[in-house]
Length: 197
Image (tube, rainbow, N blue to C red):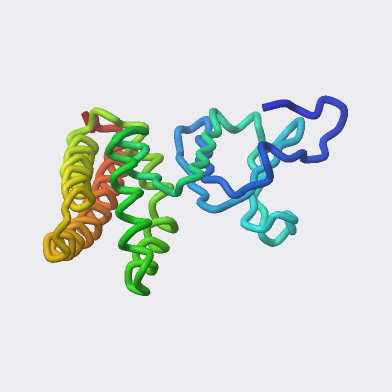
């Protein structure tokens, strides 16, 4: 991240694409911003949901009051899967199920859209605590879903594929709910100072 040493005019960070940004203040407070653009100047980080950074939709964080800024940009929109299971076979299998089955129906597209909206802050929280019990459970669930997705792809029976699609869609919803609950539990533990691992 380069700084504009000659002025205090905010400059773009990255490739002018939407990002998930977590600002951590010197007091340890986490402030999550999903689907935003990020700029910085000599003295501040600037976050906005609008790429033109209008004053009424822009938040500024002074650098001297900011401990850290975390920027996540998942081009595949597989936020929680990437945060808990990483890149690899599980991600590939679940991405294939999303593309081959979920997005082919209006309810499936709505579910994927919901996932893309709510998952960035959840993923950021789980990634900060990879060994927490709740994160390990989400990882286990993702790996089971990936195994079912592999079976679905390998099957030549349309009945088996249909049944596995229904099961995977249900688990997709359950997994998202579990991840959201894990996020809430970890954030509560963070705010109270208790250990989550």
